[in-house]
Structures are given as C-alpha cells and as structure tokens.
Length: 337
Image 1: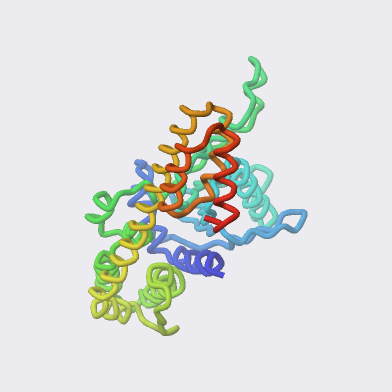
Image 2 (image 1 turned 45 degrees about the horizontal axis):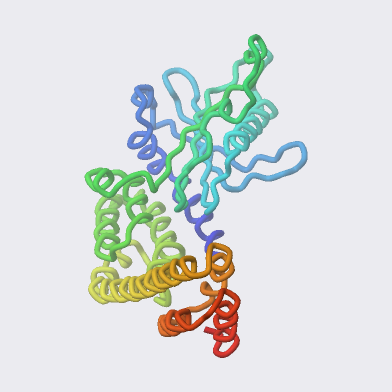
C-alpha cells in the first residue's frame, strides 16, 4: 500500500508544470535547456498500451517547444528497492511505445520526422544505482561492420540519493526540496524544508501543487518518519508546517531515542560477533580448521554473551574436537541460546 501511495503521490507532483520546469532547469545541465519555452509546457497522456495490451502506469510525459520543434520529456518514476540492470531496454521499449502512439494519433505524414525525446529515470531508492544508462553497455561486442546496425539509446539518470544536503540546500528549487525531504533524517530539517515550500508556493494558482505536496507528506514521508502519528486527510501544506513547528522538539527526542536503541542493538551485535570470532580462533588453534568450520554455524545461533563466555571456559576442558562440538550442541539443546 505504501509503495502504491508513493507512486501515486509522486505522479501527482510531476503532473504539475512547475515541477518539470524546476527539474530540467535545476538538474539537467545542458545548454539547450536554456532554449526551452516553458510557457508551452503541455502534459501528454503517459499510459501507453502496446499491441499486446500491457499498460504503463509509472511514467509522466510532457512536451514543450525547443526552438521551433516539440521536445518530449519521458519521465519514468522508479521506486523499486532493487535496481533493474536492464533499465535501458525497458526505457527503449517505452519510448518506442510513445512513438507508436504519436504515429497512430497523427497528424504525422510519411515525410514527417518524429519529435525529440529526453528519457529520464527519477530514482529514489536506497541502493546505489548500478544499471547501465546506455544500451551499448548491455550488448555483446559486435565485429567490424555489424556495430552500425545495433540500436543506440541512452537515458538520463537522476538518482536522488546522489545529491548531498550541501548541494541541495542553497537551491530555490522544488525538486531540490523534494530530494532533501526524501533524504532527511532530522525532524528540524523536514520542518525547515516544508516552511520553505509554503513560502515558495503562495500564489493562488499554485494551490494544486501545494495540495500535491501535502498529500505526499501525509501519505508517504511523515508515516515513514513518524509511525503511529495520525495526520488529517485534508491537511494543508501550511498546516503541515505548523504541526511540525509545534512538535519538532518532541519528535527529535523520539528519533534520538530510536537511534540510541538501534545503536545499542548494533553495539550488542558487534560485541557478540567479536566474541564468536575470538572463540573460533581458539578452537582453530586447539583442534584445527575443520572443527572451527563445524563450530561457526553452531556459535552463530548463540545470542547471549554469557553463554559464549561459558563455552570459552568449557573449551579448556575438552580433550578433542568431538568433545568440544558435543559441548556446544548440548548447550544449544539445553537453553536454545
């Protein structure tokens, strides 16, 4: 359900021209971007149905005038936790579906050229993006003469986790604010960014975009950052700002406590790992590599430091590897830890 909410609310955000303009101006560092007439921004249907009736639902398509021609921006919103290594193939297919749709819709003639397309993947997953951005990287090396017949295609990757707060904070840019919120780990920073959005989106014609940000905050970001906190369905962006301002100190303490608990758990786990490794080294010195290898999965089941200490003393009394392994198994059978 959360993934569906994320998909829907992100698509709602990028259904606003201001988000697309800020994305191109702030994050596509190409000279030709300056030549776009952003007053001509026009949203195009992005749900393409191919000949086998597979429907696209995670893309947003806009078109705008670049000099004297149309430029289409195909924006694929990627929320998966696992990186698709064949994203270049997927996106090539989607752009092909876009062209098929334009050909069917007309008014292209036999002499007409297809419009320019900028394919963009906006990725907000945690793992680092490792997939090839160019199709050629996925193809076998072709012998001389055959390479000219291979498809050529590449897409622009915008991975939110590649941008640091130091890069994003100075920018008066809606996408920079979105990326900062996605990457935030501090309630005070969330409150600061939301306050900036309220200031930037004061115009009456921006009410829809304000509402889109409020929906995304309520459905996606705040439930993930503040589990258990109830947020009214119809809350406005300014009300989110006020709520954060009132409760940011309390939530900061909650987050600190959560971080402390996680740190304690990680410290305990690291201590257990160190004790296991020490015990395995002692087993290896006394009884050899085979017994140590047999001991490792048994010791991995032990989650109490005191039990590992007891086994360390028992090791001194064992005459051979068989006696040692029996002692470990007996301890596991006796108390499970």
